[in-house]
Image 1 (cartoon, rainbow, N blue to C red):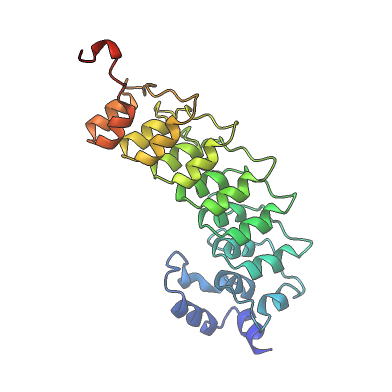
Image 2 (image 1 turned 45 degrees about the horizontal axis):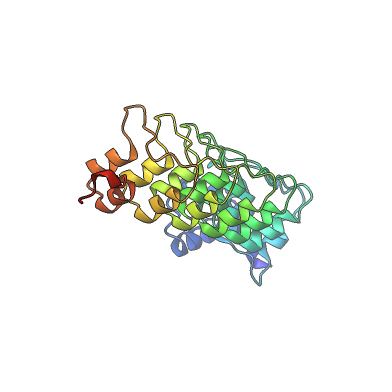
Length: 273
């Protein structure tokens, strides 16, 4: 077969140049060091799993290391999952010697990369493995759920919350839980799913004392503020370390809609006769 032979030749740059022309957005790849990329890496990056059966061939090559990292610090599975190539992910996971949870240089696992980019198919396949930890943080403390919530990937968040061993309130290194960033970015669907969990603290502050409600208030996310206020255990007046409340943040930033939601009602004793 010509395609596997071409991809397996590390000295031949033709296949990489073709791939580069087809996928110009992959600017983060150091193509000047392309000789470090094996055929399996190239196929995993660009999702070459079609009629030629390139990956199916390469994974059976004797001595092929399924878990070897390249100069970018990632494995073939990490590349395939991060780029949403479900067919390649399925083939790689079929290998008995695959390491499905092996992280890259930043500590992101294949699940983290798939979750961050919103690739539901890859996420669901990885979550089906008992040897994949859904709570594994990267070097910044960001879990797969944290990354999915930050980017507003509702389908991925739903899949992750379906795992019995998921921790939906695990913060990053700055003490910021998934709910806080989902609220800050105005991801209503994600906020609603997280608020539906009893194991999510809606008042959880980060290292600066900022709460999810404060994050939503300061950025003018009216719908999110309304959702948060719908939780009976929310504290609408909880201040940050500077003593600023959600209402004060909304006032300083001129978010009239949020102000009206946070403004305490006028007491009946002060109503006109």
